[in-house]
Amino acid sequence: MISQELIDGVKSVEDYIKFTDLYPGCHIDLLEQLDMGLTTRRANNVPNELICFVQNLSLDARDGERLLGSNEIIESVIGKLKILEQDQAGSGFAGMLLSLPTMLSRITQDAIQKALESVEDG
Image (cartoon, rainbow, N blue to C red; front, side, top):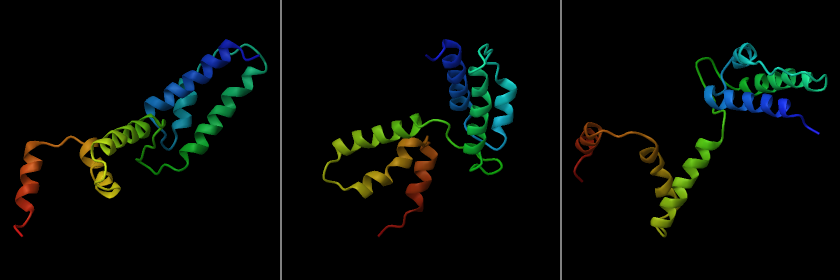
């Protein structure tokens, strides 16, 4: 049976990575933040395994780069795309895919004006 202290500890690591994302050296910062308070011998191996797991995941991040620590953002984007697909059925997937940047960014009136001015009359 898995102890509640172990579940709480793993959850705290998950929450930390969701909040900070993955970046070079994040496992060191996680280790400094990690206080799982584990009392069972079996559970004491888990923090080291979690730190190694996070370290391996963060190896893909370059200096100054952060990788998503959760797939929740990606799932949200796919959900928005599916909603758009229902509204634009028959318009083609490429057009919908090209609309993603506009759904995911903040566009100012000034940026729209500049974009309109930069297009040549055809």
